[in-house]
Image (cartoon, rainbow, N blue to C red):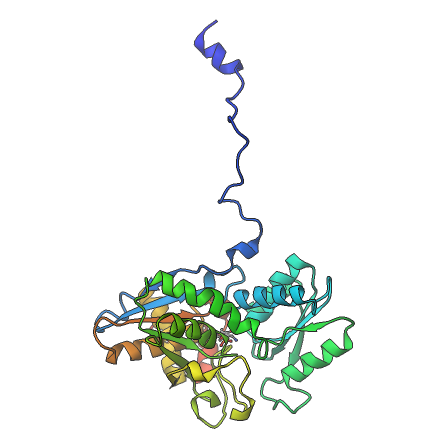
Length: 349
Ligand code: PMP
C-alpha cells in the first residue's frame, strides 16, 4: 500500500466539534439593515478647510435609509399589537419607505400597499412590484384636506382593508426613533466623536431629527445639525412650488409640518437650487465614483457649502439616503434632465 492509496481511501478529517453558527451566515436579510459605510470626499472637498464625509445608505438591503425606518416601525407595531399577524401594511411613500416595508413585509408575512406619486421612477416602481407590493397612485401636490392627497388615500385604503395598519411614516415616532437608535450612534462611532456638522435632506424629517437629536445629546450640543431643502419646499421658508428632488421637501403650508420633523433639533435649514443639486449629484458620480440619488446631491451640496466656511479641522458628514441606480431614467437621463430644464453638467449623458 502506498501513501497515495491511503490518502485516496481515508475519510476526510472531521472537525473535533460541530461548527458553531458562523458570523458570516446571516439569519435574515434584515441583519443587513444599518451599519452603512462612511466615505470621505477626497476630490470634491480637496481644497476645503474641513473634511467632508458621506454615509452611504444605499448599502441597506432595500437600497435606502428607509429600511431602518421600515424595520423599526414594523417591529414596534408587532410588539405593541397594532399590527396583527398577516395584516396588511399601508403607506404613502415616494418609494423608499414603500420598498423598505415591502422587503420587511415579505419576511414577516404582511402584504404591503404603497400609495405613490406619478413622479416615482420606473426603477422604484419595478422594485416595489418585485417585492410584491400593491401600488396605488395619488396626487402628491394635493393638500392634506383633499381626498386625493396621498395620506388621505392611504387612510381610506387602510379603513377599507380588514385589520390593515397605517404605518404613517410622517407621524410614527419609530421613524426618527430608528435614526436615534442606529444612524446617530453609527456616525458618532465611525467618526470617533470627531463630527462637528451633520447634514441631512428633509422628507419626513426622521433622519435629521432622529440622528441629529442623538448627535446633539452625545456631544452636549456641540454638533451642528443642518437640514438640506430643495427649491419649492416650504421647509426652507419658500412659498410651495414644484419640487424636482425625489423624496424630500414639502409644498404643504408650514402648519402641516410632519410630527416626525422636530425642527428644534436643527441649527439651520439651507435651500439649494435644482441646478446645483443635479450638478453635485453628477459630480459625485464623475469625481468620486459615487452613483447616488439626487437627495444625496442635495445634502452633499449643503455639506460642501458648510465646509467652505467651517473652522479648519471641522468634520462635516452628509447622509446619502439612497443610490443612483433607481434614478437611471431620471437624474442620469439626458432627456429627463432637459425636460426638467436641467443640464447634465459633469456627466456625458
Ligand atoms: N431622500 C430620499 C430619496 C428619500 O426617499 C427620503 C425619505 N422620503 C429622504 C431623502 C428624507 O428622509 P427623511 O424622511 O428621514 O427626512
